[in-house]
Image (cartoon, rainbow, N blue to C red):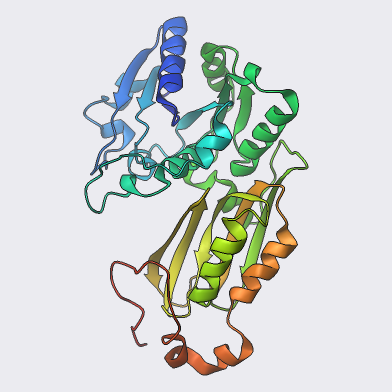
Length: 334
């Protein structure tokens, strides 16, 4: 095999390692292990623990469960092939797992966040050029169809395979046309925001929809929607939502919305320069969802006409039960 390095990811460490070992043995490939940890900023070609670009040809890279893809997969190898190994038996559980990636993470290390393992499970699928299902023989057909459709919704650009032997999956990558989509653009939510979401595999139970709203959220009412409608399951099983949002109490700051399972993050991105999202643009993916009802619930969390007319001076007085941001930008005047 003369192809470039193939990165193998997956939150189920025993299954991922078994997959790498079987593929490497069958194809006589070398294996490099990419560890996680803080300060993971080396790119593939320059990582001293892996070797240079020439040394990586025909190599499998076993990426640790807590690897930080945004630091590990950076240019110039943004078109690198990523195989995400998914244990079909535990896929839904992994996407709803509220445990952290690291039980005793240092302060400020997001691997210690509630739900960070589930976030990693979703992120790995979203970054993949190929999603390889293992242990799929143990799952009944209708459920397996749902799981494959879910993977396709989370990453419409990925090829989905029921893995019979890891070597066959790796060969399929070598035989296929080069990956044309940078890993950062493969996620279903990115595709949906770009109006390009066309999953190859579908199932009537699996849905993705895009929510848009020009008005900022009232944080108190938003918290009620998150607790009473989304997390409770009243709107169906919302497994993943990502996008951009505005909170009325923190004007002029664009927030990044990210949810997986029962875990939620809203983090500040940038001060408003007139080029960012005006209001809310959030993509939801899940099972048996009620998009219209969820849309209406989120609309009720948006500012009313009277609140909108009150302006930022009024908005800053709203109760804000959401976690504070590291730097208080909520009172910045422009």
